[in-house]
Length: 247
Ligand code: BJW
Image (cartoon, rainbow, N blue to C red; front, side):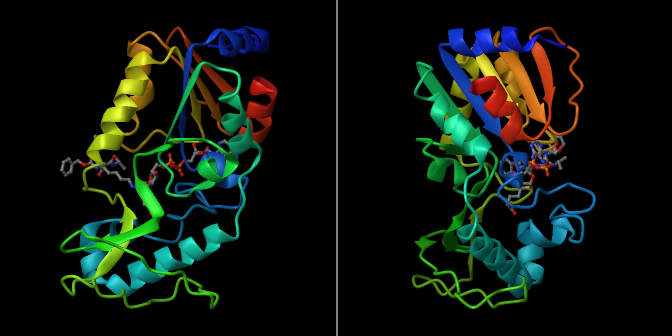
């Protein structure tokens, strides 16, 4: 449904609790690849089944570990963009803002958002594939290109270390999921920023909020089909659209 921008501005100004639900598109303007872009996405030249499943890790741990170490290294050189900053600044004006992200980067936190809920884990954490104890692994300073690197061994049980992210077929962290559901149930406005909405159960969050009476505003470079009342699509890069909407 189309809405006049001043109507949406009013919704932001009057909201008591805004839920910001983000995906890879919010970090695209920081130079971090999205997943499903046909040309530049992380899956364009990679099979998700081989890189983002426990089975893929077992089949070729060095390939998967090397890919994630390359992404960790890349993240360290990236900075939050205007979208992350606009979202962080929102907390100064609205009684309550909850940021729920599917992203495994830390750009919301570096922009100043507090208590960000990460549904798909973090690139910056590592744990044992077998005993699940956390471990600290520095990022190599030597430039990595995604080449295979044997994962380090767990100091407790000798198992292989793995990235602290959620792969396909794995459960989301229960506490993060419960907090995201609770936020969806109490928000009166949801900004859905830069996600294809294809991956479940995360994609249920905006729907749950809508069912609870919230207005849902999609911000995406592609138009998002909106069938319902209280649902709007704003088209454009997240940095620009959010600066306009929230500025
Ligand atoms: C811009 C922009 C700009 C670009 N500005 N916009 C129900 C039905 C069918 C299947 C399932 C189902 N329920 C579960 C499943 C299975 C599966 C699933 O959803 N599969 C689908 C592919 C069909 N889900 C799971 O397996 C989940 N686990 C689970 O269900 O467990 C059950 C269980 C319970 C109990 C015990 C055991 C199991 C886990 C899902 C984990 C997802 N993990 C990944 C990888 C994380 C690690 C890593 O980074 O490598 O998470 S996959 C990947 O997709 C990543 C993302 O967080 C996620 C979502 O992607 P996102 O963020 O939407 O990115 P894109 O690229 O898709 O979209 C970017 C968007 O931005 C686009 O729309 C652009 O247009 C836009 N954009 N530039 C604004 N500048």
